[in-house]
Length: 110
Image (cartoon, rainbow, N blue to C red):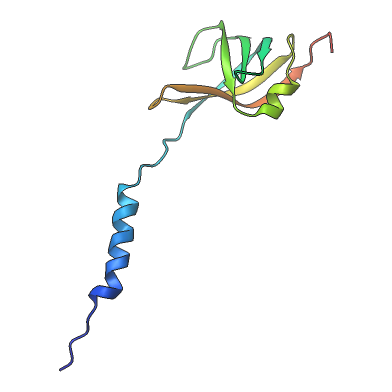
């Protein structure tokens, strides 16, 4: 009876499955809805300071700077714009940023 050598065939599959099991996945951030008014835009630091209403499940109303990752979005914002956005929170890293920013009422000085 002839013996089949299966190790060379299965070794790469086992190695790849081990790598997949060891790879660290990026946790999905929590998403909170926010409405507020842009007070200032800081292009060099990719931030906009927002005076926002209470964000249910996350924080009370306050004024604070938020990271805006998309430069094209940040460049269109001006002080006085009323916005709605998603506040993205990565609990593992503590990172907080805005996504899906939409101007709901442009500043009167535009």
